Length: 66
Image (cartoon, rainbow, N blue to C red; front, side, top):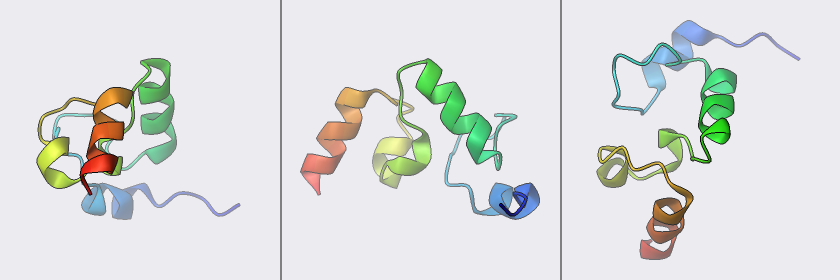
């Protein structure tokens, strides 16, 4: 498996929580949110991502709204 290009990923990461130290570290981000029973922000449309509601419930709602 290729190594992760964290610098490039940090530039394209759609998460608006700028102080997050996991920005661009997708594996860490997914693991973090999974432990918290959440979905990472990059799975949400921008309008929902900005609310910081990462719950499964909100993810399902966002998918149904599309």
